[in-house]
Structures are given as structure tokens and as C-alpha cells.
Length: 287
Image (cartoon, rainbow, N blue to C red; front, side, top):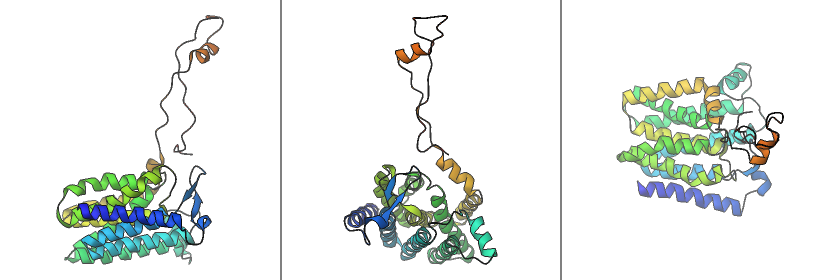
């Protein structure tokens, strides 16, 4: 397990450094503005895909394939759908009904197909294979839903994947692949130096999904599948919860500030009543 975790983490960090040193096509092609208007790098996405896929592949080839496929579908949407304001599977399916094939629809069906293929390789019975496919694709989509602020996606994978590290066997190894890649990119993501995008979010989610599949029987698969389908249906709410951040704690104003706000007709020279004010809005506050 340590080997898989280390492989995923080291591969992610190494590729991230290599892309940063010699970005294909020049640095400008790998930059984007985040939610706060800051310029961030996109190298972390491909680095996460390769790191997580390599780690997952050490545990099971089918799992490694699912991670690669999910990352590739996410990369396609990052590039082809960069200017498309439509979000959520409902919008993309609605466009499909009107005869338009969006990048989001390609991603949706591509990740679903990859999940079903990986599920067929990880499980033996037909129903279990179907449920496994739903869990893998649903996990990939869920992690992308929470990737709305720095560190949210990688942090979610670490939090949800950590219990899996306590398991033995294939489930533990796959959890190590997901958490290893997430841990490697988290500092840059939180520091708003890098963005994993759909590319990295879907790859991390798929890796996490394969760990869930490997560690659960039919009852567990069914429970996870139901929860993930519900999260997908309520995608806007899930993203809103992930987007919400804690406001800064109120700070006590200085004595001069309190004095300036004191009721002068009551206490012309004494400090005013105790009070507090909030600092400037956090960049993570919802708009």
C-alpha cells in the first residue's frame, strides 16, 4: 500500500514539475483565471491523471484504465467546452435532445462507458458489474461537482479515501492510489498556484470509485450507487455546499475605532460599547 501511495504521489509531483519547467506550447496555454480572478496553472490536471492511473494500475489494470479514460474525457471538456456556459448533465442532455452534441455530453457518456467497462473487470456478476459502473462514473462526477474552490476536490478525495487505507487487499491499494495523487497536488491547489480542472477531478473521482467498488459487495455497491445518483440529480446543491466557505471570524475593533463609534452625547470621551465587525469577504464566499 505504501508503494502504491508513494508511486501515485511521486509520479504526480514529478510530472507537475516537468510540465512547469517545459510546458508544451508555452506557459500561456497552461494558464487560466480561477474564481477569484487569479491566474493559476493547469499542469496539475494531467499530472494527477498519470499519477492516479499508474497507482491504480498497480492494483488492477481495469482500474488504471478507468482513471485514464475519465481523465481524458475531462481533458476534452476542459479544452472543447472552455467557453460553454452550460453546466450539469441536464443542460447537456437537453442540448442533445435538440441535436447538439456538447463536450459535456461526450464526457458524460465517455466516463459512463469507462466505468461500466472497469466494473465488468472488477466484478463477476452482471448486477454487480452494473452497480460498479454506476459507482465509478458517479464518483468521478461527484468529485468534479465539489471542485468549485481551491482544494475542495483533492480534500474530498483525501477525506473519503482515508478510511479505505485501513482496508487490506485491492481496495486499500486503490484508495492509496487516489489519496496519493490527491495529496501530491493539494498544496498547489490550496495555494491557488494550480488548478486540477475537470481533467484531474474526474480522474481522482474515478480512482476513488474503483476503491469503493473493490471494497464492497452488492449491498454496499447499491447504497453507494443510490447516494451518488442522488448527488448527481442534486448537483447544483452539492456544488453550492462545496462552494460555501466560512467567513472570517469577527475581530474586536481597536480602542480608537470603538471611540469613534461611541454615542458622543452619552460618553464624549470614553470608549464606546464593545462591538465587532467582519473583515472583507473571503474569496471563497459564494457570489
